[in-house]
Image (tube, rainbow, N blue to C red; front, side):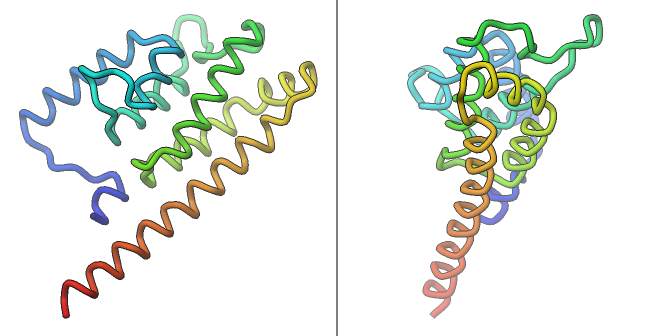
Amino acid sequence: MFNKILGRTKDNSSNNKEHSELVQRISKMDLTEMKSYVNNRISSMPTSRDGLVEILKLLLKVDKKTNTRYLKIDDHDAKIKKGFDLVIAISTHSLITFPVIKLLQEFEEAYRDIIEKFDRDNKQTYKGKLKKAVENSIITIGMIADIQNASDILQAK
């Protein structure tokens, strides 16, 4: 269980093939499809810990040609809001892991300029919402670890 929380998986050839297929499918998704995936609404593709990590990596990836990220400061407000809501949905997901939390923190840092501009222009509070989401995900991981530890102790007796 703790390996799952830490984001560790077994490395074998079938797992690598599945992972590369997952990465390929996620790379073709738009924000609405990503949110459907996170909410487990795509029947052919159940939500996984690796999927959550890959979505955040996609949002954080910088395009080498244009030197831009997935969300740009001049994107429509609706797209930016969808992106922020997606990140909040990931932070509250039951499959949260430490690598996901690390990427959530990176997202908050990388998109700080867009978050502040969006909040200022739209009188929103996404800066606080995203910060609270990261804090809550850390608390959730702690609770999951405590429950697993208690379960392990009870099974040992």
